[in-house]
Length: 217
Image (cartoon, rainbow, N blue to C red; front, side, top):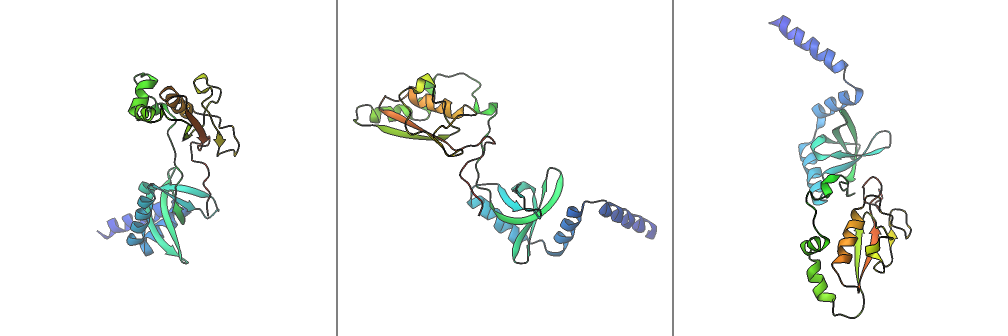
């Protein structure tokens, strides 16, 4: 009996000694002061911000995003909230900053319908037929601000339909579309609305598919 217990303890010591320093700190911290209510309050803050990611400042100063599902603990250290989490197969700890409010989109094939449809059908699906009825007999110009991946300003469907283009990523007036989604949506708008409807393309996504114009405090 005692021999079995001793063997188990030795095995645990060997496993702990082989863990990375961050994992040992994590294990010790969880054992000493992991705070369930504190972690729950952070989860609620993420939910209020409508995100599943928390921004965490690492000891090196680098800021990373930790997914809610990967956060394992929270505790107070010198008046600041620290989190433990798993990222890329490693156990890490860092200072909690705030919810990650940057929005991302999937630029893969999931954005494309498996069945080809006409632009008019796509317009009806998002209510452009009703918009056309509302504005077709009105004087003046109606402007639709399209905040997306940018727009191909030279596209023939968009001739004489573009007004005041802006690139919030590069801070200029050439919102070059790197993914095609914004041009796709602009084309649907142009094909389903009368000529007095203008499109204001605003590029708000960078090359990493993250929203522009966000700064850490």
